[in-house]
Structure formats: C-alpha cells, structure tokens
Image (cartoon, rainbow, N blue to C red; front, side):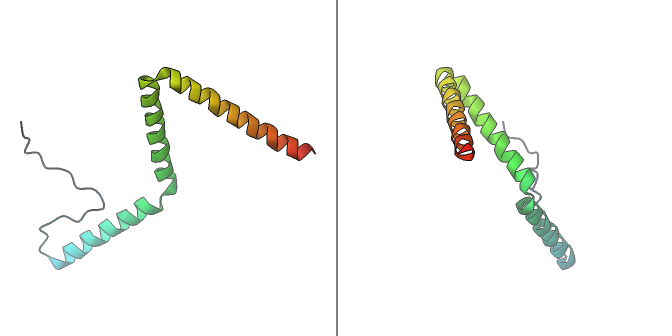
Length: 92
C-alpha cells in the first residue's frame, strides 16, 4: 500500500520548483528565519529533550521494572548524599 499523499515540508526547508527568483528568495529567507528560531529557542529545545528523556525512562521502566526501581533508589541516595555533603560543608 503506497500512499500518494504529499509529505509535508519542514518549516526550515525550501520547496523545490520555484521559478520566480523573488519567490525563491522569500522562501529561502523564510526557511532561514525558521531555522534560526529553531536553533535559538532554548526553552523549546530543552522541553523536547526533557520529553524525550521521560519517554526513554518510561520505556526502560516498562522493559525492566526492577532495574528502574534500583535506579530510582540509587538516584535518591545520590541526591540525599549530595545535599547532606553541601549542608555539612556549609555548617562547618
């Protein structure tokens, strides 16, 4: 089953087949501005990275729940030890 539906272009791509030089320049400018926005929008990129990390953690938890529980406990111990160490250094 092959579908003949057109694949949507990413915002950062320039469509092929534009003959008018002015329209081609506008399309290139629009794509360049979209690429700059994608690159410079750190909160959006960070949000995507966090969402990807959460999805990977959930997939790992579904595959191996015992190891995920051990990882959570180990992480909690590490954070607790770090906080204890910082507080101890601060109070001395």
